Length: 150
Image (cartoon, rainbow, N blue to C red; front, top):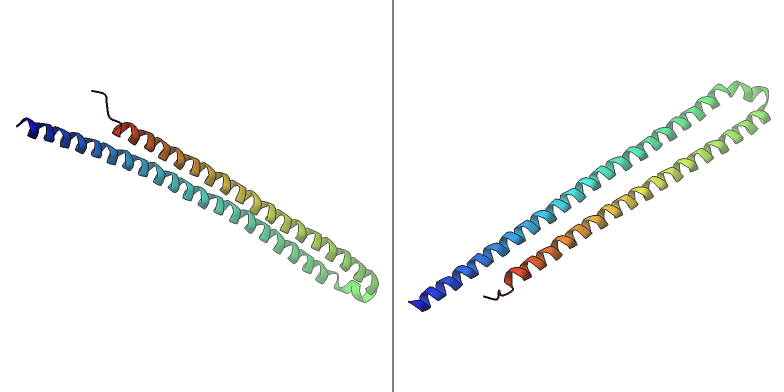
């Protein structure tokens, strides 16, 4: 009967520790999933921010091109009066438009780079948090299964 009692106590102790370990794993999984959800939300937020910046640039580029072509149409009567002067002015306007286009492309490249840097920082922070969660889990499980000195 004493052997049965001892076996029951050991089984109860093992079951209790297994239950605690499962609880620790469940908590760790919940923290990891929360970090991944936060990463997904941050990525979506950053994507929307980048899309808005790029869309704004695209609208500015379309407006600039419309202004250029409208100006060309308005100045059409000048072609007949002084074609060389009109050609020179059109060439300068075209060069100015090209410079504006390059500035827009440069701005877009900077926006994409900054977005990638923010996403990288977010991913690194998430990775650190997940590492800390599993390090903490390892310590807790190790403590749980370390034999007590009774």
